[in-house]
Image 1 (tube, rainbow, N blue to C red):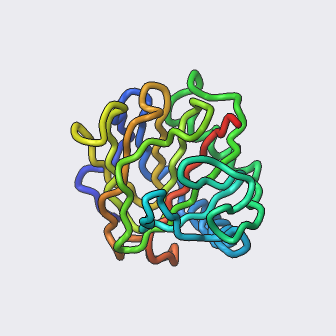
Image 2: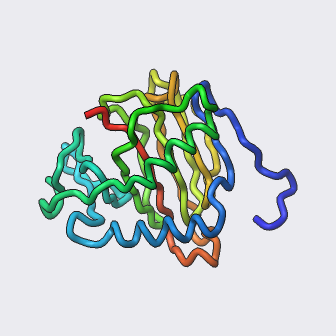
Length: 216
């Protein structure tokens, strides 16, 4: 919004979990969006994720570094076209480490190399149920970047998918980092607000880029 009654500020949502509004400026958002559009092209491009129970996720996904599928990682798009997964670029790793340092402080910065990106595309009807990012062998913080439409991001506890939880509004350019005692917290996206993306970005829908250390 151009005129905030109460300007958004950095918020510690839980121990080890921090929301930093407007972390990416407009130029950085456009550059990241352009990269996402290239990564989404085949081979090993944007695909619909099928769950073990036979259902499908409403958010579509493309992966870098390693291909995530329920519930593991592979070098090829095993539940897509079978092509080798696209490489994880070094500049994304640099971005992730800077995000952790700025969100959690230098003491939480990891020397481990970020090597995986999961990029989810949400249209107006897409949702993400409460889940934990638990398929990695590393406890390094997860870095989440938002582009496009605003969403409701629901952040819970490590014990249960149900309450208590905190709902956070994530807008284009926002950063959310969770590590330490919150690394395995349940989280999800119950709602996307269509038509809320910055007009100059040129994106209909929402992109969420999560950067992780595989430990593999």
